[in-house]
Length: 424
Picture (tube, rainbow, N blue to C red):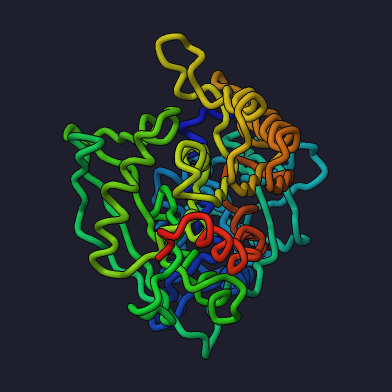
């Protein structure tokens, strides 16, 4: 199991993993109006460009992998379908770099891009490949490079003829409940929304990433009637006046503060634009890592307002340890077992190679949640893959996850309307 610092893993691996389909500009190939896919990159490397063409291709590879500095350190691979691309830049005179699997059975030599010092390779892998690779130069390990390959679900791909919803960047929000913070947020409204029919709603933490792919899935599933007409709210963590992120405090703390923030600030502001249903059966919340435990906390604190939770590689560990060093999310399995059952439906996803650090072991923590939810009789599903601390597996199963979360929605909403007539 790879053991990386939580902050380094999240920022460098997780955010990099958002781009399942990577596009390279084609200016070096004389086709500036289109994009160079990984397949085209493989063809370009096979052509062995020299001179100006090599310099142009090398610069595009630098830009695509986050700049020269990142390229020199050995960045995470880029993935498109079943193709994976590695690239690294080494100083002149260095031995040709290669990529080696953790068990040493797979070795890929990287192709030089002229005499630029940039090397790259594009390789085809089977579906659901999960393996740790490393960059090596002259027999010395430069960096780890975890790889995950998942065949994209057809409902994760934009389809012609499917009505498209609209994503709007909302005015930056200054919070009262998280005083001194501002944040970005975005609103997705499906094409099928009608003001006379209030919509369901699903909130996502770390919204800047989720807004890039969730709307396509919503469009496809709403069009097929597999999930209800649903508004998506994508909320970024708060930023303090000194520029520091307030993410860990907001997401990892076990309290009702974030729930109050969503209910008292974000939802009312959203309803100035669209009309939403108010029953718990019509509301879901999701997130990844600390955003995943945050989603669970919102529903745990306010099951009368949110009845559905989607958590990817959830941080059910002792991150917000507090003054006692034991106030974190690792307490949830015990709380679930000893607290009267709440009306919450939970979808958990994790991977065998998730984090293991000072805060805890993520795979074990999610397995503890699995067993506790089962013991307490919750309506839940737990999918354990082999992946790392990123969104790749979660994205691959997102359509299935949403269908499972929203199954029997009409009957749920009707039953709740009888018990609690505040629904619309």
